[in-house]
Amino acid sequence: MLTATPLCAPWRCCRFDELGVRELQYIYMARQQVFCVEQQCAYLDVDGWDEAAWHLAAWSAEQVMPLAYARILAPGVKYREPAIGRVLTFGAGRGVGLGRALVRQAVALAEAEYPGLGIRLSAQSHLQDFYRAEGFQAEGEVYLDVGIPHIEMCRPG
Image (tube, rainbow, N blue to C red; front, side):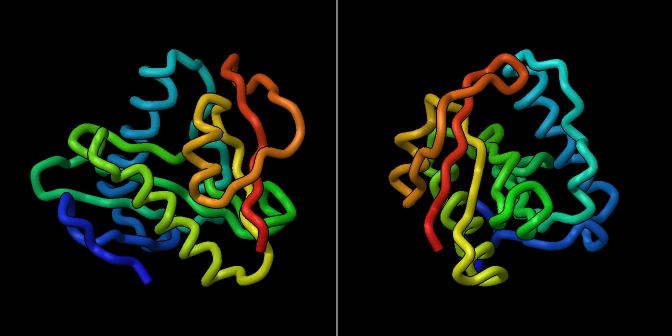
């Protein structure tokens, strides 16, 4: 199901308790750098849902931080459907199509683990076209999440 890209080693997807201490540290560092520092949002990134999640990351031998990362939550944890969140690319993973590959890998995992249920995410509103190209449809109105406009999007099951 998970395939390698020319840019990085094969994707690693695992549950929280399968992550090594250093892997978890680097994932948290990347999330804090992207979501708290770069986006200038003071919020608690470690929200208590990581222990219930699948963690999907692309790693490179040249960079200790993940090149790309997303977490996948089971149905009923955040939404009725499975959820994809904390989607990011970092460092050399940016600008080379790895974000699109990441979303496709996350969708494949969610569909394999939770078939027929659809997938929901909360997208920054300026990324609607990006997610729409991957089969997601906007639902509801734009709302602010830590000061950034977001919209819920769903990919039908």
